[in-house]
Image (cartoon, rainbow, N blue to C red; front, top):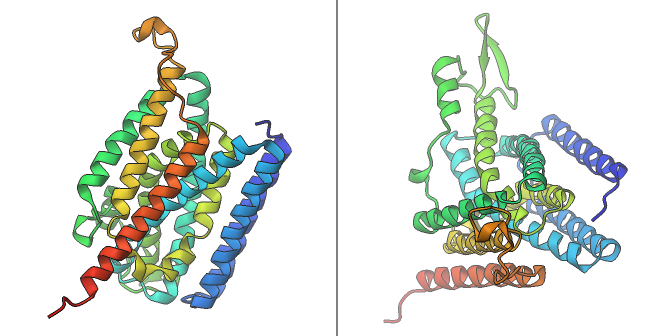
Length: 328
């Protein structure tokens, strides 16, 4: 896929302008978005992602179009799982509802910056060292096993990032919210606000999330441009999704298991791809391992969609059976 430098520049520039405007707008008018606002914004973001994917399909071919949709769906699914942690963070810090949208948006911007760094590093590693797919694949398999063992996240399972604990211990932090400000002055001293601690926690948490999301999407496409745009579109609708389906998230009891299966599938796909492109001298004499199949993107897309549908239906059916009273 040949992406001209000007397309990169326009894409990155438009993304930066969009997020800066969104943050500025929310800081001027912090509030809890209504259901109508969330639905309108989410419809726009999903529609924009679908339109972009169709555009890639039409201009670059079905292979790259399929890779974008597979990557976007995977990143969006992982982002939904991340919302469990976001809800716990908001609860632990007792963030007022009218300030949660601002905290989420700034945390998402930080996540996008950090993922951009991971994308660049991942692309450089892949271009220079084909064996990195072995590492990515093994990491995703281990992550999948751990995610399946942990199951559904709960409040007791969340540990505050070490950096946040260090800041809380060594720097003065105000007890008052003071709106969405990050710093205030009290008795001549400059203090951090609870909002700054929330944003720092969200940023550090998103950094950890990027450790599995970036290898996962590189297992579906090796095109950095598609990796970037899939992440951008997945993160764009995250805060609206937070307010729209916050209650529904608690009913998706099998989401972690579904995501664990997806990460396992992509991890195995990466390892098979690494074997197919093998250059390690101690494996098969540095020759390609011919029997290792390269899983096509259409099959990956079918597995991703099928897993998400089965996970959602099974979760909602399980929740319904628990809510319905047993017949007397």
